[in-house]
Image 1 (cartoon, rainbow, N blue to C red):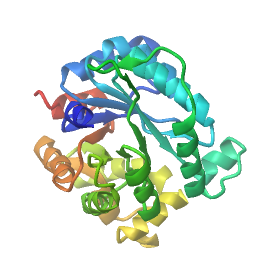
Image 2 (image 1 turned 180 degrees about the vertical axis):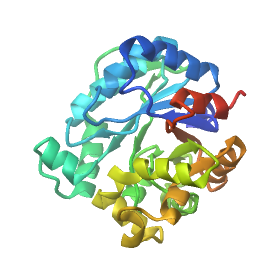
Image 3 (image 1 turned 180 degrees about the horizontal axis):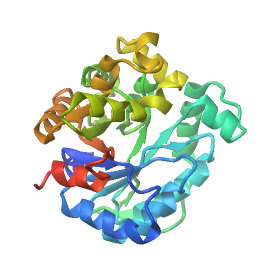
Length: 307
């Protein structure tokens, strides 16, 4: 755990790969590694499958941690996830991290056709099964010759799922959260964590808009939050963060977009990202939003840890 905490570094990257043309994937990953980002996370929606996508860029991604944030447990049984995770752990030389989540009712029921029932129970059962299942393929060994496995993190927003992350996994990957919420998460994780284990990893994803003018900055931020504000899981989380229907219903309040999206010039955005670190994050996964002036890679260039 101390090794991955160091390798994650202050900043990682969330997204960016699922919709890039195939010819651009490997150069994009190589440039991200050159810029000093410690991790690269991809989600699972209705675009590319994250496991082969990460395998495709493994050789070009330097020393970055490559992770899923997240894959949907309703879409893969525990054995499928374990085989994929262990395979990528081997192919990356021990640089893979598995992020799992329960997703959302509309993605599980309407898109996949599964019943979205008792998500906390389903996650707990899934983790138990994952831990018990065998894996007989080649493995990555540590210095002592013992087999290693990839870190396992889960998406968590509220108390019970965070407690499960603290007791049964290596950490959590929160989304659509404020820096103040991260501070609360850090406290809860530390309180629930077994004393004999290293502190749980906390790696929030934070959307970024490089724009100092409030008008266009908030307009781009509103475009970003639109699909998430429709999801009941995020609404419940936002309510606990002090927001209400007036904030997450269109056209979305300035207060909401200002709190969950980091916008401004490079210095202002860097200060916002550092606030998440100060609040207790081990690393912050930057979601670079495109604008008329900047492509996502431009954003990453401007905020690069090694710049």
